[in-house]
Length: 358
Image (cartoon, rainbow, N blue to C red; front, side, top):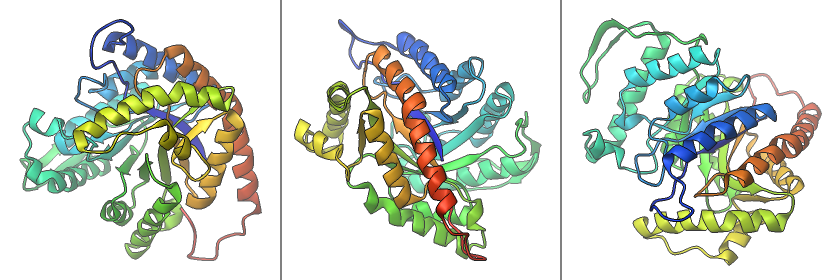
C-alpha cells in the first residue's frame, strides 16, 4: 500500500502576530514535500482552493517547484477542481509537471469542496454536475489521444487539434476524488478510473460500501477490477506521544472545522468530540507512531485500499511540528504499515478466476 500526505497549504485568514502568510507557507511546503521524499513516503498531494485561508490556488506550480527538489515521491493534485477549469490547460500543466519530474505526476480530479471558483471563472452553479461530467470526458479524451475531436454542451468543440506537450508517462494517471456520493463512486467505476475517498468525519467503516459500489460498477462495465486502485484520504497527526499529537493537532484542526462549519451551518466541534473521533472507530488518525500505524492497518482490512493519504498540516500549524510529524510518518509509521500489509497480502488466498479485489 502506498502511503502519503496531502495539504491545502493553509495560511492565516487575518494578519497579526504569529500569522503565516502565503510566502512563508509555500516556502515551508516545498521543504515538507522534500522531507516526505527523503523519508520514503510514496505520494504528496496539494489541493486547489480560491480562498484567503489557503495559498494553493495553483497547485501544479508548487508541485513543479517540488519536482526539482525530490527524486521518487509521486506528485498529485488533491484535488484539481475540474468543473471550473479548462481540461486542455489542466492536461498541459500536468504533462509539463510529468516531464519535469521524470514521470511522477498525477491528477486527482474532483468537483471541489468549496464553490468560490465557479463565479471566479464565470461558471454557473446550476451546471455543477454537468460541468464535471463533460470536462472529465474531455480530459480523458485528451489523455488518450494526441489529436482530439470532441463536442459538448458547455464548452466550444475541438476539431482535430493536438494537445501538447505529451507527458513522460505513457498515460497520465487520473484519479476521481469523492466525498461520499454513491453516484460519484459508480461513475469512477464505470470509467475504470482510480478512486480516492475523503473521510473527515463519522465512522470510516460506514464508507466501505462506496468501494463496493465502485467495484461493482466497474465489473458491470466490463473492467477487470484487478486494474482498479483506491485511496482513503483522512485527517490526522503524529507525534512522539499520543498526548502531544492530540494537543498539537486539536487547536488548529478545530479552528478550521469551526470556521468552515459557521459557513455551512454545522454545530461547533469540541475537545470531547475530537477525542472520540481519534478513537479506534473514529475518522481521525491522531497518536504516536505505533497507534497511527495500527489504525491504518485496521482500516486497510476494511477497505482493501491501495493508497492512504494523511492531511496533517491543517490550519496554521508550526512548521517544525509538521516536519517532525512527517519524519515520524516516514521512518516509524510507514515501516510498520508496510510490514503488516505485506504479511496480510502473503497470507491471503489467491483470487478465483474472474473475482478479484481492487
